[in-house]
Image (cartoon, rainbow, N blue to C red):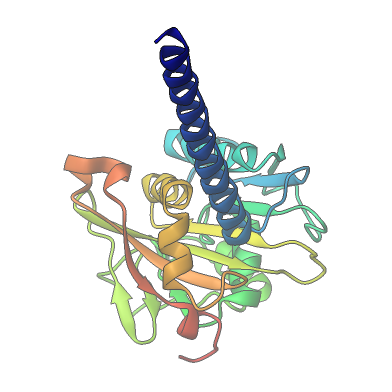
Length: 265
């Protein structure tokens, strides 16, 4: 009987070990699949150095809004989850290609991030950004700078004066509604001279910049299932009921890839 009891005990231990090994292998496989998915969506690999391009608070050069700081933290968390180092640079000081470094460029092209303005003008000709205040009315020098330096950024002084900060793509206007509803663009592309992609975040406000990076960190699978290619995409994100849910209420509104990268759509 003792031998039978020992045999049963050994069989039980063996079954437990096999079961534990199967669970470990399944979890390991799932972790590796998730890691490969994150690498594919973000375009970064373990050992990379990810650039985080820091923007300015609107109307206050040299300062950064609290929610934009949170957006940078989200980008850093995404980078570290992929085994990457992080380098933070100011948009006012960074010129040239991102080279072999994946880039997170945070902030809109109008008064927040001059590098975003360059990316938008060169890469997203199908998207129009309506300003909060029109430079032709508020600052003649700004109007000259815009006309000479940012030919891809279109201002509509009379067409939609009642829609500040709106995004327009494919003939559809996506309006900023103060504390009720706002939008952000989340785009990925490879810039001229770059070997690695740019993740561009252009929110109508600092809170929507935060929301877009929060969405990226939590929604790799949703992004991969939505876009035709993870190499290049442009998604419109909506943040509804801001006063109730804040940045955590962000949802995917639509895929703008077909119109964003095509002039005159």
